[in-house]
Image (cartoon, rainbow, N blue to C red; front, side, top):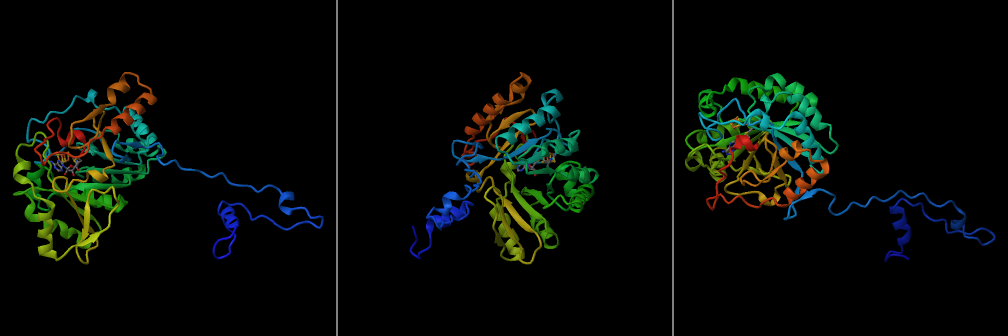
Length: 379
Ligand code: SAM
Ligand code: SF4
């Protein structure tokens, strides 16, 4: 058979499968050479199923990114995250042990998760953090581990974390003024955080992203200084809209600054920002100040929720699968493990839970997450 240009279609097709072309000549006795030759060695074709065993929800979204809260405790008390006093932490025996955590990560890897983010609370205060990173990175399929940290303790351990397999970090930094930093974190030291950030940069925990929650009356007048960091450094400065979380009073109702307001402020100062393409799972809309080395990002859970591209679920410090940051639906894993559940049962529980992941957070309609604070869920 030939195509319109007269090329042999069958020949081309067989070559594309790795089959050598047939010898169509004949022996002097008239026998077909192709029948005398050794049968061609054909490599098996690997047919990838349409849905390759990954964990899907009922909307067809595949979950591949797990955010793990390593602890609900923290060495700061940021105004938008925890109350100044009276924060209640869970008894230690209610938190996942190292072995339970590693087992859970292995199960997530089995159902197709490729990316992990360690968070909290403050992940750097979890004992054995370096060993945990090493163990998590050893699972086949886990391609990337990142961490969100306040960086207070990072300068001491950045090198060990990198060596154990941590790939990159996000550092929370809401202000460049050390007095305001002390106020917003209720006691934090900006100089130590900055040392942590530079240590991470120098050991290669990159690309570095900085998260700033913009709160009216606290740091909204500083957005140009924060964005200005990207002029000289190839960091990504991300502005987050504050979310209403349990335990922080009226700070959300009084403090919300939308991303479009922040962007307008930046454009008044720096001129029009240039849009940058981002991968579909990235919740940030990313831009560049003209001529800057780094980029700025806007994360807008309130004004522009990114539910359609959501590929993430969370594992709380006490071992619940949290399906959406801002919805209270959770799936029990810790108690099943402690009751002796097999991996097969846990995997079934994971898949069934993910299937019922909700869509939309309903904040605009007045819904509030009233069960847990951000530090317990793992923001
Ligand atoms: N302690 C680490 C840190 O601060 O980077 C990790 C945990 S913290 C809960 C994770 C992220 O959640 C931080 O970037 C923090 O700024 C953000 N966050 C906390 N409370 C928030 C809120 N009410 N609205 C928006 N982001 C919040
Ligand atoms: Fe701690 Fe992070 Fe919450 Fe601040 S945002 S109180 S550093 S957990």
